[in-house]
Image (tube, rainbow, N blue to C red; front, side, top):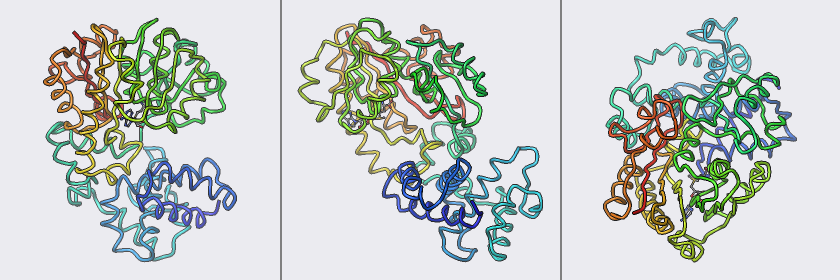
Length: 444
Ligand SMILES: C[S@@+](CC[C@H](N)C(=O)[O-])C[C@H]1O[C@@H](n2cnc3c(N)ncnc32)[C@H](O)[C@@H]1O
């Protein structure tokens, strides 16, 4: 595709995404569908379009700061900066140029050929700015309301954390241990030219080098692998669901954790996958068919106090509440969330989380386990919800997440948890996962 046409397509996609009417991943997918016939996007073009857009979202404050000094439509200037970032990220680290001045053999050549003289000079000037000369907000690119809670929690880890949150995520797979062994799948991937290493903590995970297409692999079509962040795998592991048990995945969504839990139950017992979104549960079905699990029962509920929930009260061995949350731990994949969320939206979510956790807890039988989890990095969605639940439910005894994971033979489990070991707390800069929280209780 001609560089000029690709930059124009990037500009249009940036324009659509910055309306913030829909999640960025949905806007990108729709764009690819809508323009399939207009442009012949190959894998490289699709990567350039998606990454340009995600770079604009990740670096929005800095790019907004640079944009007024350029000319032409603002979205085009933002797309130029996002595209330049994508080309630099792709270039091998040792010959990445420091400035667009060396454009003769720089990764920016492709983009430069799409620019007019004025734009090229402006991009060179932007590229020459040293990050050290920028204001703090243009370096961290986070909304102010998010900066303080992050600094308060990670202290000096703030800059490594924002660097990771503003970068891409590795590609993690979960091996379906009901049907396959991790080492066998790793070997199979190697034969297909895909390098995969064991994830450091999850016993089910493989981390892939690069972003190879997986859907054409036999391992994918026969359900031996699912794309799943190592942190999500650890949340499912923490539930420790066993053969023959009655288990509920209360907020199952498209079933990422349901499938992991069903495999750990060896497709025995009964695993209810509840969610208020029938649409999300629909997306679970093809994955379920691939997985060969026969113990999963998806069920759309109207709300957390639904009749179906009441009927199972006190009957369930293990309940996972993977609560709806701000998703701010997933900024590597969903950079638009930092601009789409707000303190008010988070406040509303915390009310929902409290209500869902209290309802789901009623399902747990005496001696049963309850796990509350989020992919948020905010204490009000995490520790505050868990502490308030413990205070209001003395019949639920908190279990140490560190001890629980140690019993499950997770290496270095304490390093994944709060200093008292009580809660699982995963951070992108420390654990190379998304940001996750989990609390565990046993019912008296
Ligand atoms: C974090 S997502 C779940 C992700 C899923 N567990 C996975 O691993 O793919 C939270 C889910 O909670 C669902 N939800 C929202 N309100 C709910 C409620 N009152 N009861 C049950 N599920 C709810 C949402 O539809 C959403 O799918």
